Amino acid sequence: MCALCAYMDVRSLPLMWVVVVPWLAVVDGTPSLGAALGVGVLMSVAFVLAVFWWFIAAIRSYTGAPWIVALVVLIAVAPILEPQFACAAVARRLVRARTRGRWWAALAGALVWVGSEWAIPKLFADTLGHGLYASAWMRQAADLAGVPGLTLVLLLGNECVLALVAERRASLAAAALALPAALLVYGATRSAWLAHAPTRGEPLTVAVVQADIDRYDRLRAERGTYDAVRLILDTHFALSTDAARRAPLDLVVWPETVYPTTFGSPKSEAGADLDREIAAFATNAGLPLVFGSYDADGGAEYNAAVFLAPSRDGRVEFETYRKAALFPLTERVPAVLDSPLVRRWLPWLGTWKPGTGTTVVPLGLRDGRTIHVAPLICYDAVDPRLALGAVRRGADVIVTLSNDSWFATGNGPRLHLIMSAFRSIETRRPQVRATNTGISAVITPTGDVVASAGVHAREALVATVPPAPDVRTLAVAWGDWLGPVALVAGLALVAVAVPRRVTT
Image (tube, rainbow, N blue to C red; front, side, top):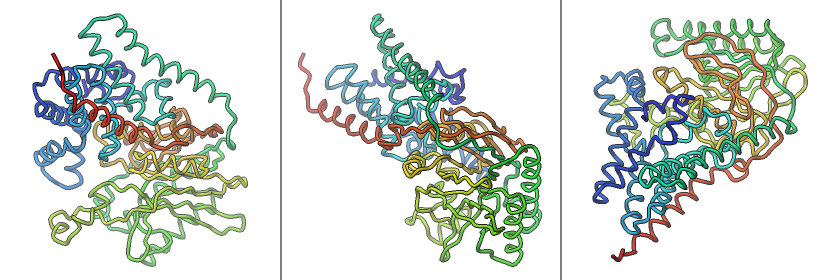
């Protein structure tokens, strides 16, 4: 069932309301706390293998490890990747054993589930609430408490179904239906209001270039560094020029690390020539260009987004955003593990440094307007705090650059797209998303994908980005608030229940 839910489309939407019912029933039947913990750990392994099986191919592709090694690694780290199962099972078992109260145990388990996902950083930042993206109305409630709020509602809905199966009471059927109905009513009302809300600024016409070029390391080995960069740039120049012929553009966006060297601080004369060529392209087109590159400072190197804007006098000005959330090991190595010995064993470990975090970049357009951009690079999009913080600082639009080529097998690209779309729902800001191999997209403030380029498509999307509604959501105002509140409330329920002794 988890494997079916991983598709996160209309086919799996009904399953989200029953997906953990069998597991909850098994937890309730465990004879001891240790058994409940074991059921939680086993569920984490089963869930990871059912939903993230494609990560085995990603490990093999990046590290060169045999598939059996990648499989063993994935199984071994599954309880760390999905810790909520063990945490919720223990909390639920403790409260149920001490109070014999189904609903106290259900509430404690659901709260600890949501709280543990907030407290223990998850590599994929996944949560059950992402499965409601397929419903254009249900997903709108993410502007209240983020995706964790949807997860909490789903868990309580699963609990109602479990109770209905066990007790067969009409009131439980009503409760099971009331939760999705509440989401539908809120979403329909909210969507109708947003359609007529005052807006910030005007629409933008953008070109999003997806060249379907991946594995830059292999390309360098085959062609040499300069020829590899030459091929990448020439392809993006050609696609961008074609897009500019099709429509009057306001902005061109290229993916993460599309220029796989430093911009603005060239490492060679050839690099300086390429810098000038990129600047000349933007100047001759008269268009702002956002693209992924590297940035260097004092011996440290960063994964960066360059915002390049030609001015009226022909000069080119640029600002740089440095990626804040680096993918563990492949981009960032914890200091405790970073040693020459470890790097000899694992030569693929990353060397980038993280940026300072939330940033808003003002970008001048050729018609004189200035838009304020919330920049996100790949893994930045899974952390809602960056987008929420940027919107608090006045961002009008989210621009996301990503390299999803390592996850081009299975549901990885779609999961990343859905996570990005929720950043637009939470903040009510439109989003332009450029990836090298897909899925590139333009996303509205309600999370609708109005244009997209599929996995391994080569094209330049030309699309209109709608203006943002002039509204401040609860998620923006309060931030990622539900996680800590749920953790404290769930632990409080456990603490109250544990000292009690049941009398018979």
